[in-house]
Image (cartoon, rainbow, N blue to C red):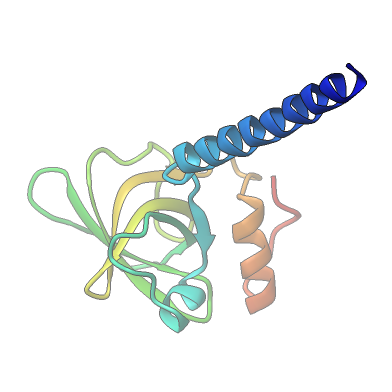
Length: 148
């Protein structure tokens, strides 16, 4: 009788461990598309991501690079002071988006151009995403105070 209780206890523990492993795997699989990595223009040019990888890029909009195309298509360059990456975006830009200001874009790097699906701009004169501030400080370009 004691052997049967011991065997049942071991079976329950093993079953619980297997269920935990399966649920962890399913959660990880479901979240794989929701994780977007941040890269600076220097990192993008040093190690270009695959064309299927969705990631975020951030830096300053290069002064004099903003070109408005037909409709809602916009092209500009983003820089971190060390490298420049061309960006294209089709859509409505945030109100505070302008040259010389910080931005973060989400999209894919295809044929040497970052094709953004979303563009975010700073929301007031003191905000800049922490990742962008860190990269700009490393490049010696950042002149403001700390990030967000």
